[in-house]
Image (cartoon, rainbow, N blue to C red):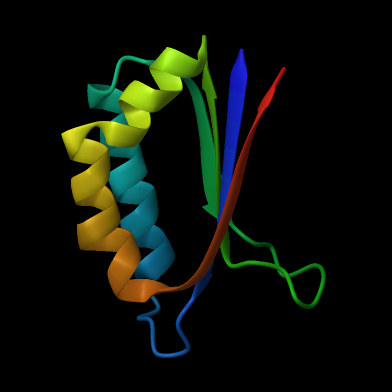
Length: 97
């Protein structure tokens, strides 16, 4: 099983609805990309200073399923339409669980 984690910091001028837009888009991706085994995402709770604003945790049965997800046209459109306009910084990693 592959776990993918991505964390985002929003631009200072990102709209207050940025996180909601990401959540709505991720919900739709989970409905259309069957290779996603599990999907969890949400906004930072603000419990510590310096945290990222939003995170996604996605699980996949294998690396091919992750690659299918990463390259999927719906995922790529989500990135261009919903992430890029509000993104200041992104970090990610994948590891085996």
